[in-house]
Amino acid sequence: MCSITALLNRTLEVDSDRQKVLEASLCQRHRGPDWSGIVEHPGAIIAHERLAIVDVLSGAQPMVDPKRKTVLAVNGEIYNHNELRSSESAKGYGFQSASDCEVILALHQNCGAKLVEQLSGMYAFVLFEPDNDHWIIARDPMGIIPLYHGTDSEGRLWVASEMKALTPVCDDVRLFPPGHVWEKGQDAPVKFYMREWMSGDLPDAPYRPEELRDGLTEAVKKHLMGDVPYGLLISGGLDSSVIAAIAMKHAARRVDDGGNTEAWWPRVHSFSIGLDGSPDLAAAEEVAEAIGTVHHGLHFTIQEGIDALSEVIRHIETYDVTTIRASTPMYLMARKIKAMGIKMVLSGEGADELFGGYLYFHMAPNAKEFHEETVRKVLGLHQYDCARANKSMMAWGIEARVPFLDREFIDYAMGLDPATKMGGNGRIEKAAIRQAFEGYIPEHILNRQKEQFSDGVGYGWIDGLRDHAEAQVSDAEMERATVRFPIHPPATKEGYFYRKLFEGHYPSAAAASTVPGGKSVACSTEKALEWDASLKDNIDPSGRAVGGIHNDAYGDG
Image 1 (cartoon, rainbow, N blue to C red):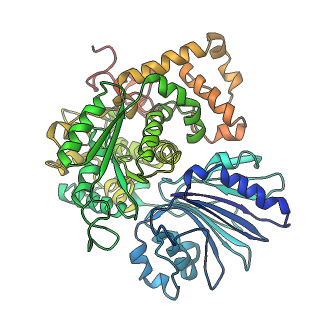
Image 2 (cartoon, rainbow, N blue to C red):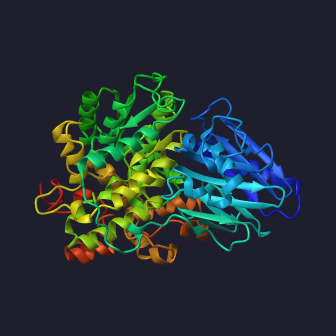
């Protein structure tokens, strides 16, 4: 994974433009500490900061098509690049490297912007044709990779992986939407990722445990692609534990050559983080022992987390309460992982959205509403869990991969009859995953109830954040919250405190508008209130706040 910065629609060659692009790119160097590159043309300047994962020695960017001189900068991984290299769509292109990203240049030669329909992976890219000043910008279907765009005072288009690169030079900043592609001449990005499960019709594919197991196994195998040491994030919950267990079954051989050779790094390290006595640390240790990783249970204190909040918010570029709570321990963990020489990790994001794993899904009155809510959650992932995992890890130059969000597996999971995914009536959430992977991890971990990550690292973490915010924000400030912050005004002192920190880094209204909602409450959405009016007084997104469902709900002891 890397960062990209592009200045497009240049009409005059201004000497200072190159320096401006270099400075913007430098703001993102944490994403690509291994090498830098920049290509300048009269119509565009494109810069790249590289984190070398595949083809470490010869995959530098921006890449340039030797024949057509097309320039490409990519952030991400193309998991099906080997099969695409030998496809008819890549015919006639002379590959210069083993980089997975170069296949985009090959496909562009024959397919133009329609190339995105063939890519399986996580990516954001800018492609520029100097002969006609034509450009293409695209972002992967789920928005696993972040991407922003904006315009400067001269009306020129800027594109960057993170907002922090654009706010110094752009009058406006916007999220580039997932699953969209934008060509010069079009007024706005155009959606290319459209599936039947988004249409409103109820899916009806039958659930077969072996099909789920095979599909997720194939996704994990693809995500092991790489030429550098990797690790596994194990929170101690179901999702990350299953991903880790699958990975360990395939860790002995290199997936890049079809398993023909032994893995370059046969010992796989796993990581978890929590406060002393956290439920996640104990569970993760047990999982690691069962699957055979070299495990590192990392500890942090509430004060260490509080001390890091400002930097966390600067990196993840949000004031969303849930995201900040979960991002902080992840950010601290990433720094320690980096110190061990690990450059890529597998994580379990996406399962709760695909399979209705959040505890309020137990309240869904029927399969139709259950499915509609999973669709909403899946399509909103790019602003929550995807952003958290990517930016928290990339703050220290570590690539986070999320196999549950593999394109093919998403289509499989969202095509299932939602009735087969529903919990309730004595059936635990995500039972479909649990049944498919019986025997992979210890049974009581397999059946461990859902925890929000910010809960699982230690229940004192959320309480400590609330107490700190209470001391930092006065009642008078809260009374004027809607005046001070008219865009998504905070509803709690904790939210207000994060908003102040965010404003210190990103003071513009445009920056504030890139963050969805004000409280982004995971269990108190409008839909959940329709399902159960008792949630109307609960604006906290913690999983343990869903009384009657979570074993440690507030007020239950």
